[in-house]
Length: 215
Image 1 (tube, rainbow, N blue to C red):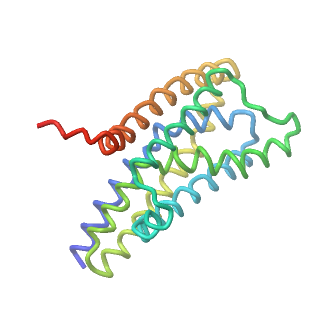
Image 2: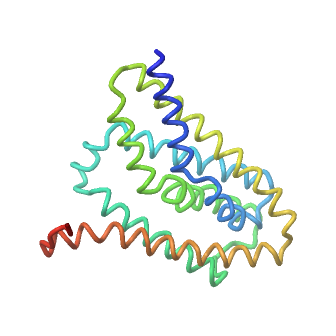
């Protein structure tokens, strides 16, 4: 039981680090600036639930999922990179096609943006998925597996609270400050996307062109 507790603590710290809430927070804050507090909370909840379900599914059935669809972590990283790049580009241009109707705007965020790209791949991206798979492989006993999922819930609640708190920061920034942050975060997202694509495509290209590993 003590080993399971220690494993759970390791999982909590790993999962929170991989979810990277303080990197997601300014993006979430910028995207949900036009929403009411209630709509922003709904978006945060759905994004975190989406990320948690995605993490749990990949951790529990990674081998089956990869075999059925013929995919790999590398290809997932490349695809996620393109999604993030497009999102960052739209943020840089402030070019989101948003409805002027508050109710329609809320539905758009809660049903669309909350799932992709906020839930996946911003919160639960390829790096986080890899961590979940590795930690699940380390869970040798039933107690370890229980500790794994408890840690996932704790990490999810932590990032949810951080995202909800980001609304207070947005209120302090005001409209002009929020627009500046939106464009800055768009640029950062595009840079992150290039890193994702580069990391994912390198092993794929090595395999295609049979390039040996250095050293």
